[in-house]
Length: 380
Image (cartoon, rainbow, N blue to C red):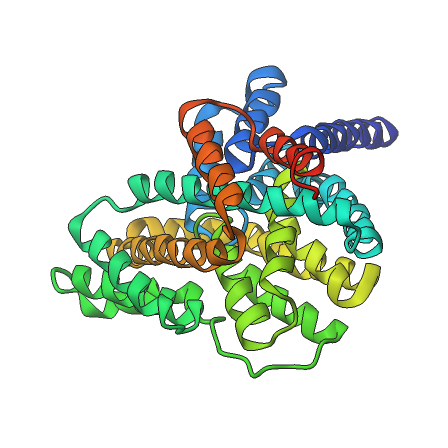
């Protein structure tokens, strides 16, 4: 009987691993595509859980910091296979993209100076700006639900353009949102609204090393609310402006790799880790970036219930999301100056934005098409 139980558990975990490896290998299109694939595989096809429970998980990941689709994979792994499934679901979803990104980072370091690679990236970078700009528009429409949230976003964008650190902008946005709600409710509830902002301490500029890479990406993974493109704002503020670990061009290339590969966009951290410290740096950055997601999911059940009960906590989170919209807007402008250099790049940006707006073409195909155009037409 014990052997039968062990075999049954092994079969469940094997099936779970295969499902999330498949999604990790084929999940182009970012979190919306990932979530749709997970619902189709785990709810519609295999009936591991009900759609109602899937929606409960969806609500939970929107309340937690970290990459949403990765957290959903972790939740679904836990629902299907317990604690072993929690780890296996997340790892199998992340691993295919991380391995592919490491391979691309190796090629980038080895061949990035070739004229062909420069032509490819020259044409791809305006597409990345168009992708971020389109995501900004969709995100703003859904997130800025009230005049107060719109005002928070505008104020944060103005402040962010003049270089306050993104963490402090998000903290201030949370405080403003919570304070307005607290005027109508009990002020002591304000403490609950700030529970996820505790890790948001400032850091002095460290030397590049495995420890500094690990703790930096661990911090970012711990406080990253909102769209995956908020990650770009954090990375630019720290790695480009403050510490000069990478350039604007390298950051754009990292985002491009995150877009053109399947799986979570946050594997841009893997690419940057490789640039900073080779394969070991890529592994360290990947572990640090995604580790908080596993921890948050493991401990989230009581926290999510508490946040749902507290209107002030919800208002603080709405403020964080409004601040995230502002950060994406600022980084779009800043990186746009590095990518939109002349008439051809501006045309590529405008055409890409129109295609993303009016069609359902996967952004990965648009990136590849632009790169081919760069190789064939713009190489001179």
